[in-house]
Image (cartoon, rainbow, N blue to C red; front, top):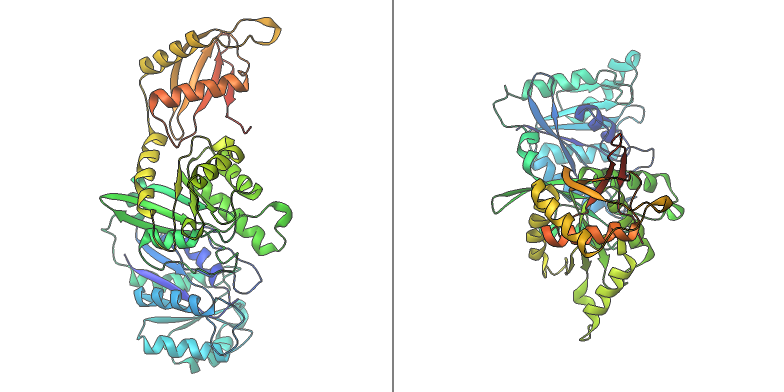
Amino acid sequence: MKHVVIVGRPNVGKSTLFNRLAGRRRALTHDLPGMTRDRLTLEAGLGDGRRFRVTDTGGLEFGDNPMSEFATEIREQAEAAIADGDLVLFVVDGPDGVLAEDRDIAKTLRQASRNVLVVVNKIDRSAGEAAINEFHELGFERLVAISAEHGTNVDQVIDVVSALVPPSSETTEAEVLSDAIRVAIIGRPNVGKSSLLNRMMGKERVVVSEISGTTRDAIDERLEREGKSYLIIDTAGIRRKGKTTDEAEKLAVISARKAIERAEVVILVIDGLEGVTAQDAHVAGYAEEAGRAAIIVVNKWDAVERTETLTKEFESAVRRRLKFLDYAPLEFISAKQGRRVEKIFPRIDAIAQNYRARFRTARLNEILEKSVVAHHPPTAKGGKQRRFYYATQLKSAPPTFGLFSNVAEPIHFSYRRYLENKFREALGLEGTPIHFVIRGRKGMKDTAGHHGRG
């Protein structure tokens, strides 16, 4: 599949153009320079069935005093994308004219012998030709003036891409990923999420830094491993709302929450040196509210001074603070050293299978009957004794069971938790939440059952 890569210095409108080509708003855009720090790649279409990949890169800075502390890492990520690109869209700022950084980027592209289209951005229709002229000095034959924000002349960019992309005979990325396990790596800032992604991918895929907030966009990566497909999403560190001060961080949190919604399994990363915090519980709450399967990963465990009982004590603390994720297994790893990271993949496979699982009605009724005999449900409002008639599975992802009762009102939280535990134990549903929907016999009134925290 042909690969289009967008490069340029910071704040020239690369991400806005990326969103135009991708056909949806996936890259974060903001007036602040440096919003994009990692590569962000999506599959896009031309409207006639032909597909191509498009990559947004971080702003390229040269010189001794770059504005971004990540300038070197961003440049390495961009250079890796350029090396893999079939067409480079070199975005420049029309009103700014040619700057020294533009000349440096042009030199890099000429040395790499890439197929380049210079895209002069932020130009209105009337100023098009005049605005292009001075950019000829960059040394590239093809130039086009556009306004990515307003869509002006973006069709000319698409025409160049269209000439590059052959008639489609390939399997689309959407088809390839239809059976892929979608995994989001979440956590508060600087707990090692990007280090874990790099270790899982077996390469330096995203920028890693001791400075919190390095990742802002959710980064998607495809991985084929032992005959299985994965889509792994690295997300921005999530802070409490009151702690999220600048607009860029707020956008990053929104992106992270959307990534959780796209995932089936979330990996909640906790800093083993700092212990489980209220903020970890806040982040975990997003996964629980979204009804996602989960694994809790305690990172940096190699740097912890351990005692014979520390692991058990740490696990007890996690279970106490994250009661609502009691279904999630726990792994202790070092992403930096690679220790026990391989243990995560079998966990993902098993949990995803549980998350997608479907069960026969007869089996569910057998579990329900045994559970009720062992512990009768509490009386409903007004003193009416609740009875269950039968159970059936309404959907998977997560497993959701309808319980048909003589009373339509919700069951008491403690009894709901009891039934969850019984169904999870009998069906082997580690790692996935279980939802119940109570249906009254009269009128089949629905009361959605979501197990809450506490």
